[in-house]
Length: 109
Length: 109
View (cartoon, chains in turn blue, purple):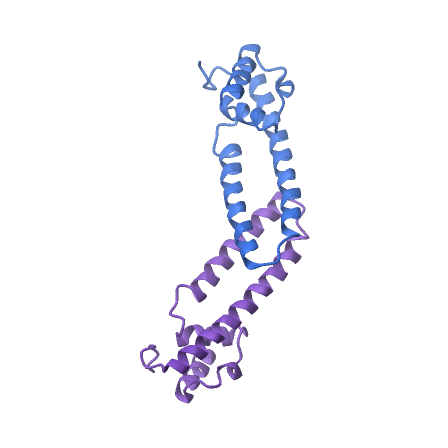
């Protein structure tokens, strides 16, 4: 399966960028809510270091997904669909064969 | 000024250990209160990454002070006095010359 981005149309790239932006907003808003909740339960220094470990891990994964990857990578879109930060409906408008590959990767990954 | 610990009596070491324990409890309790307060103001992902950076820095410094150093190091005691996690009164019972060195280092450091 070809998954490089050189075959993507400008429309595909625009749709993918917008979808990534939506997923990023959702994932980071969910993290803000989660941290507010976790932080309200902190009573001991060990809770703080556990929160610190958790944030380091989250940052590594979020930065890896949204910044280090090619913004139009099918793998990233598929991962976000799998994680439910995006729906396949939000990728409507992508070249059908490209969207089908994202859907297939989301099931496989 | 000799500051190694081989000259310390067992009483000195016991007093220093207890003082370090007190300082650690105070400093970490203050950090818990501070993080509770900071965390309640988090509204955006950038606030979370700023908190993460702050915790990484705090952990580095706290671990460095309380775990990596010799527990009876005059330098650590002097630093804690300077930072107000300990008072010189709490080092009463130390060999007077040792206590005087800690006091002198606290002013210098």
